[in-house]
Image (tube, rainbow, N blue to C red; front, top):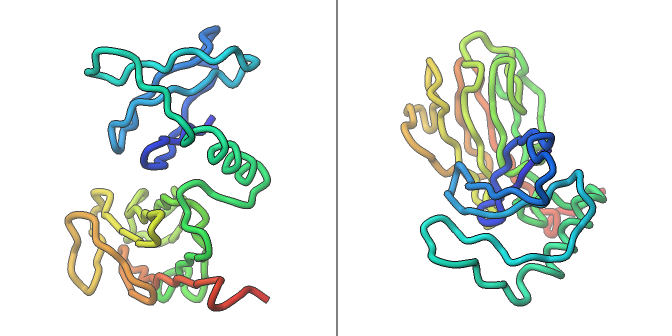
Amino acid sequence: MIVVCLACQARFQYDDSRFGAVPAKRFKCPKCGHVFEVANPGLSPATPKEPLAEEGSAGPLPTPAARTTAKRDREAMLMAAGLHTPGMPPGLIFSLAFLTGPQASMVQVLERPQTIIGREEGDVITRDPETSRRHALIEIHRDGTVWISDQQSTNGTLVNEERITGPVQLLSQQEFTCGNSTFMLLVRNTNEFPLH
């Protein structure tokens, strides 16, 4: 199953058979450190119970008022229908155009908040021998900003022809290079330029 952090929308895989017979498990997000509870998908919904305490706190979490029910249920319905991806800003379409490298002239739409670029592994496959297996990470934030970070690749990730050492913001139509593959980020506002 895919577990989604309620605070930062980071996604990670978890083997749901590890739930066993327990009704819920507590997770700590590896990205932001937020502690949250996930119900066992193999059990039928039970009566609501008191939320678990966050690490380092003395008691149970306060019960959130209006912020948890209707909005999350609505988002869950939209996600189940394939109409909304958690963490993606509405009204914007993000794409990567391959400018050079083995996949030159191709365009790939980015459909998730986190996208791994890699030679043979990840969401965007370069098939470029100069690109590492897991080369770079692109993160799309809810505010519409796009960030790229190198994933300890051998040849590095270049933005503005400089090797990056931490997360760097990318703007629409900005180019970056992984190995021998150069990409351009394309951001389309569907409100200003509707799809035909």
